[in-house]
Length: 482
Ligand SMILES: [Zn+2]
Image 1 (cartoon, rainbow, N blue to C red):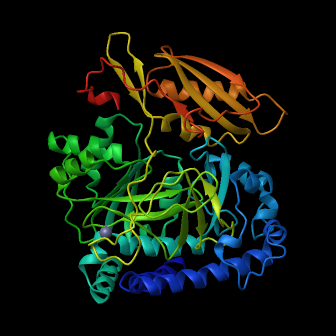
Image 2: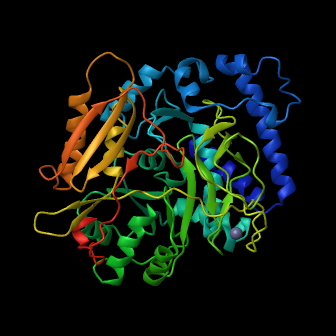
Image 3: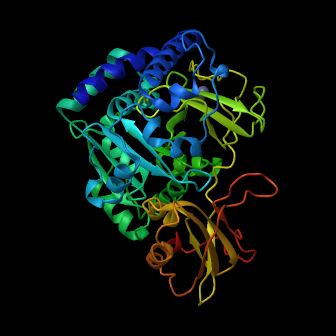
């Protein structure tokens, strides 16, 4: 059922992909109006919010802005399916046995702390995942090189013979893995999927990849740089020669340096994807120039300043307002996200009919560097904390400040006044440090607070405030420290 639907969506996405901007705008308008109707009919929150607004005729800018806290405070009235109750979903998410399963047979809930450290839950409908995956699939390079007919033949060949072998190296229980496991493009009839934890020792990951011999790799940009170096050093030995081969990354900026490493190692470009939990498919890069292009058939992105005024093309805004046109079950309409984005304001020579964006700012993963007793530093990826913290449902918001080289202050705001979560938080943080062999070297200070303050200079929330790389850091870091 899911797979058949995916193939139908794939054809529609291929047509869209080869059409022009006006056709895509027409699709966008149609989906926007359908989303509004469905939302007002089924979500109590939006019924109230849009009272007095003519949803047949209004412009997007006539609609009020929605914040993360408004969504979470009203969750059970916010969604368009009355069976979705926040507490029940949180309990379901916290149970490891549910990893890789559908919730109520057709929903995929994910938890996030986003860029503000403020907890949120987003539920995707299975149909939305099918629609999005179809669109993302045709954005990958093989979609450009072939006609719709050839494309379909390749798909059928996959069904009947050689399956693509896809390896994802990510946070084992993170959102990326949750989405990949449910993405129809990676359905077991089409692909063999292997999930590896990026926190395993690098030798173990290299050995697993050498054995699996993936045709496609999905990971974070910083990890592609590590793997490319392993390949160039001759320890990693993978070749990409499947017709559907690709490298796909996202979640942090893809630097030119990483790009060059990947080209040198495998002669392949990395497909860069940009999104957040509320709309994980906002933009994908083109294969020719690596520019991000908005997924404008599936979402609307307004770039605004601090007072929500539109910012001209070519200039960076202070935040964005996102409208997710694919997922009707938890309507994200003019939803505020504090990402720094700009439209390029000119068309891209690649010929894609989707608007190009300038590189996204501020997606940097703020690495923490800790001193080792024998000298030198350990580089610690913040996902080591952020991944496990997603699953503490009593945690509302947090911030980690590196107060000295081997000292962290953890500030947290609980969901409610009931119960004490300090012990649970300490244990989670210590476990994450322990996995990197750091438990006895880093002092943790936990403090419960009423609110997490915004950064004085940028006015933004900063989840992790690292001291940054030490001045005497040996740039040729030991491989084992990633
Ligand atoms: Zn382009």
